[in-house]
Image (cartoon, rainbow, N blue to C red):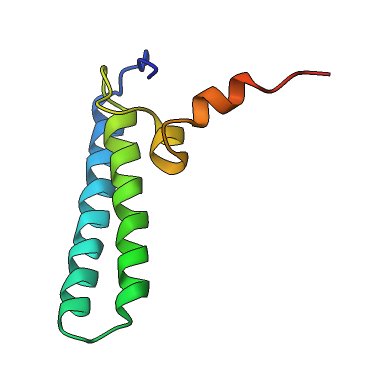
Length: 90
C-alpha cells in the first residue's frame, strides 16, 4: 500500500468531496429503484459496485494513510501491485 505524498489543496479537496457525494447520491437512487422493481436489478447492482469502487478509490487514494490502497487496488484488487513486479522491461 503506497502512501500518498502530495496533499490536496482546499479546492481539490472540495472537488473530490463533491464528486464522492454525487456518486453516493446516484448509488442511493439506483438502490432505491432496484428495491422498487423500477429497473434491472443486476444492472443496478453492477452500477452501484462501480460507483462504490470509484468512491473508495477517490477517498482512499487522497488520504495521507490509505485504509486499503490506491485506485489500482480498488479497481483491480490487492494482487495488482504484485503482478506489476513480474513485468520485465525490454
